[in-house]
Amino acid sequence: MRDDLKTRVQSQFGVAADDYATSDIHARGESLAALLEVARPARDWTVLDVAAGAGHTAFVLAPHVSRAVAVDLTEAMVRKTVELAAARALGNVRAARADAERLPFAAASFDAVACRLAFHHFPHPGEALREFRRVLRPGGRLVLADSVTVDEPDAAAWYNAYEKLRDPSHHRVLSLAGLRDLLAAAGFRIAATRELTKEFEFHEWTDRQRVSRADKERLLAMMRDLPGALRPVMAPRWTDGTLYFTLLEAVLLARRE
Image (cartoon, rainbow, N blue to C red; front, side, top):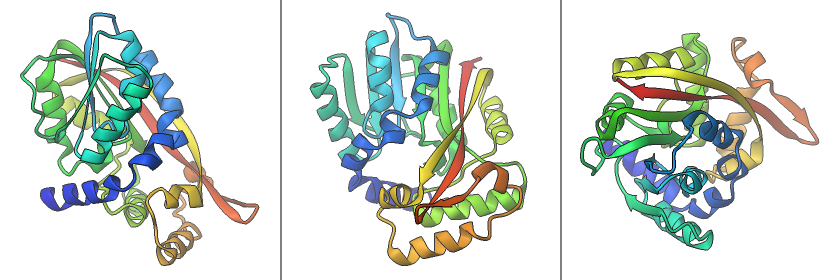
């Protein structure tokens, strides 16, 4: 499954680099500010942005650190990061293609690692966390921002099926408790947590992943049969002929033990 899922990630995102460069939730989402706030970067730091997409997290960190390295599995995203960094005159940003579960860096190379809105794509998230820990210096900081779901197993399974129908490269969104447990098992101590909500308009959310009309209809039908445990969380509303709904996001600061 590892290689199949990673192939789907590259296929799905290879054609969407321009979309992710301008996507409001990725380029200007609230978790960017929260990530910067909890990371508290220093001028002499070298930081790594893993699964960087179009590089937005690296760009936010770059003015506050000595060097920012952005890596992504998809070559088109790497090229887009290089293009945008140059346009923004961010000379301390470097970009390269790399697998989050097999990072091509020496141990203890970075003062901080950031991973935003990508963790749910990793087929083996525990392996990725162990790689993050390996490349961090002792006491280094990991800032992880990702969607989270509810603890109730059936509702969580429904939510992940919903996300996977929209994006075949989706693997699994965890609950906040599950994410904390995974971090602890990988040798991290959680130092801070921020919980955020973000509202989406259905067609913008699906069109970014080029969802077919038939799958859009399936997604809308699923939302009309939303599990009770998710109803107060996702808060679906039909307004002006379209669907709006809310997702949860968590930003966690963890330190390498």
